[in-house]
Length: 625
Image 1 (spheres, rainbow, N blue to C red):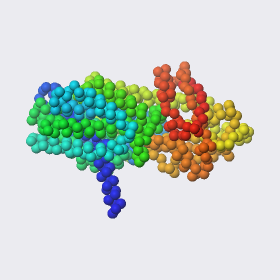
Image 2: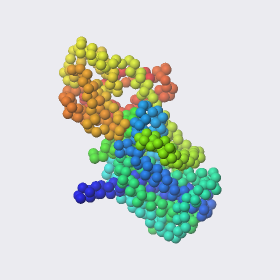
Image 3: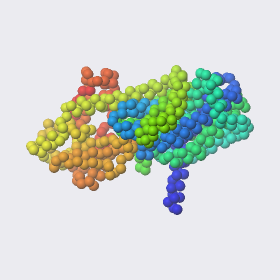
């Protein structure tokens, strides 16, 4: 009984936590989604008819039911990679199912990752701006201060990231729960005064609106999509909260609160067409405006936090999967391995967010830029889900197509509708996405060319070991660990050591660190030891793509497997390559320069693998790429 009550307490805690972290983004959409949808349908200054309002409300309700509830909550939450979710986890799962290099899947992973960064920059700018804009309703005198206040809040938000989110996250759930209660309360009050808005549950209103409004209906659909932004976060945070709590929170708290609030805003706009300037804040009586602006600001900061944390996790996964160079990763929580902070990513995100706020200056202008990043990611997710359902779940081609095709069609329709906004601001996430894609593609391609080029000049390891055992050079006491990415060839550092010093240690270890397609690797599978000769052995350390490699900790496991070594008499040999552009590298000159720049900016292998700096010997080599 005691264990059962503990499990229940854990479930409720996770459900509350997921309301804060997972649903912060989608929970702040009511601030701007209905306003943007109605304005797209009728234009500024024109009153909206009952058929238009009911049509838009119907599209909003069914978008929440089909895209979020059916696609993400019921289907995609089942497509987990050993408990982890998100597009890169899905890519790793699909790649493992297909086997081989699966270039198309890597490309899909790169596209979705690149678009997520667009989302991570727009979400804080748009949501915090839309919350602070509520001050205009309190008094128009606040208008000149909206952008400066937003900038200050965002700078503070990014400044506290280095302290970790674990402490703040404890308050996220309760604050967001109060936020959803406030959404529902205001909605119920206005629905009671005009119950006819409940007709919007009938999908005929949405379909007839689309059929009778042509291009305007299509443009409106792009704005309606704003209600489902944040669905990707729901899937990406699967590893933090688990399937059950996320589903429960959506079906019992979030979905009802959002639906009631949108219906309430619709009832308000029908009663007072002028309310369309800011239907969210006008739902509340005057005395509640300032508390609601404060609560909305808290909710939007929480929503931003979820996306920032997501950007760190995505970058960490991308580094492990070989899509980005090594960067500094700091762990901010002893209990939660997923709680990390990346200084370089934090700075880049802050600069991007501030640039957006200063360029666009209002949430309406930014809303146009928002949809493209998210719809693009959703299309990619649907394509990868098709492969996983077909290959991993072993569904027939017909069943898989019948399940995924309707969702893909809806996602592509939303993407097409959002593409109409390219010139209104939609260019921004596309430009950012293209930049990130170029960086990821260049890093992957350059690394492959570099690997192939260095391999040509390398000597097979086993042949070298055999010749060294026959004619051994002078031996020195201690252990030498040579780090290499290719365990079959003699490491460059070993060859240089023999060439210049003409000595060999008593014990020599050829060490390779591999990234597994699983998120985490169990301790029993962490270390693989293969003796090559009395003085040489090959050791492979495996880490999951969600883990941060820690070589000394992994070598402590190797001790249990019979490798006796003393870290204080062990030297780690790393080869540090200085890259020079070659005349014919197989890449355009700009890509050459970008790859060399990325290689120079990469975090030191010593720090990345957490090797004690006093035990490291670096051997420099020059390579042309």
